[in-house]
Image (cartoon, rainbow, N blue to C red):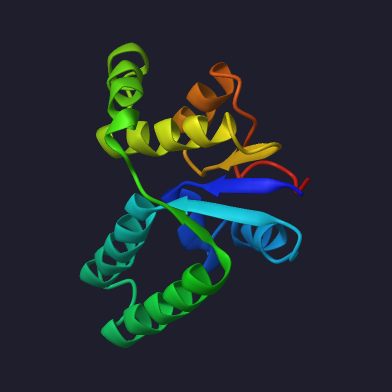
Length: 150
């Protein structure tokens, strides 16, 4: 059974139609695919939609609707993985060696930790730099804005 770890940059495409949405839907919709997200992704998703509202891209009502759809699906169908302090050492390494931003380093640390226990895990992310770092760490990765569905 394939498992997909979603970074927030790809996850928001499930609920807000933009480049990469079709690919994200193709990955999430099959019942045999496991979708994993971190508790951090939950917070980041709320923040992403709120930022869209603050930039006048969407209304408050649209934010409420997007968040309702996200929480309904996440609670029913996704595995939400808590972040533990054991990820911090690797996150520090990613920041120092690969110049990742803090939250990106935590997301990638979580994906890498899960990959040791979850067979056939693929990292799904719409950030080219983060994809490149994941692949350099031998973590299979897909960018929904540029890659073909697998």
